[in-house]
Amino acid sequence: MGLVVKQVNPDLTDQQKDVLFNKATDAPFTGDFLHNEKTGMYTCANCGKALFDSKTKFDSGSGWPSFYDFATKGAVKLVPDNSHGMNRIEVICANCGAHLGHLFNDAPQTPTGNRYCINSSSLGFTAKDK
Image (cartoon, rainbow, N blue to C red; front, top):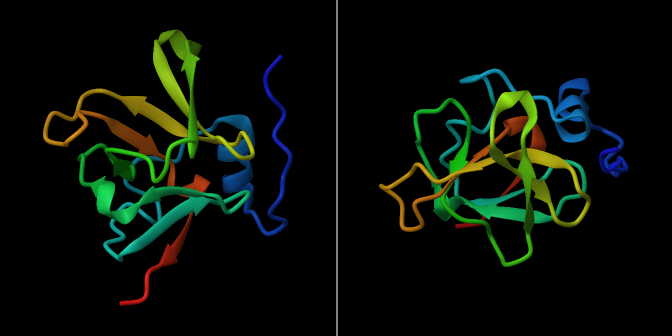
């Protein structure tokens, strides 16, 4: 039996609930944050915890927002995911346990070699004042 994540944000859309709580995936190239180039912090859409700094965002060409590192140690948890006949690493919010996306080590163009492939529906964004 999987972890049951409690909804904290009462204003989540049906798509956000499906991604965060049922581990669904946004359709590629459709998310609100895919082409976001603003400076700021990406947060969990459910609990608001800081997850990814915009400084680590890059265009992976995958169709989902991609980051090469998390914002702070302990921001996310990594869990083995062997669903759908694949061996992957699931990325979840360390604060509330909501599903965010998956981690792949296929980004040699980044400082870490990692690609945190994250669903836009699982994210919020707080712009940084310039």
